[in-house]
Length: 88
Image (tube, rainbow, N blue to C red; front, side):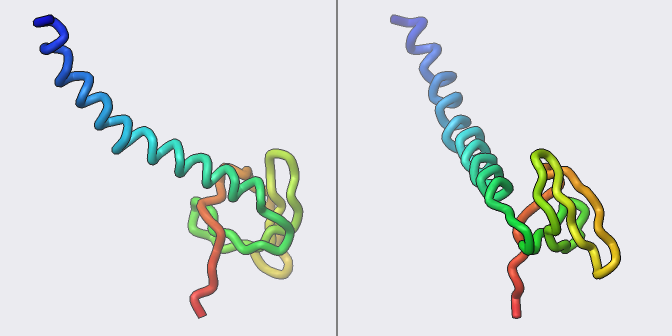
């Protein structure tokens, strides 16, 4: 009985860490993965490097993106930070 009362604070701290840190990170990762899977040609996205690009072609692990009218580059899907929303 005494051992259980000594372990109870540790179990409480682990539960708090799960609900405050781990669970929100897992939810955010799932939302980002769903956003990446839903990307289509013509979508504007922001890369981890801060570039705003337009998706030219969607491949299995990579995206071909247009940086301007003449430049098309290939980037990894993991390099996408978020979709770009015009603030106009």
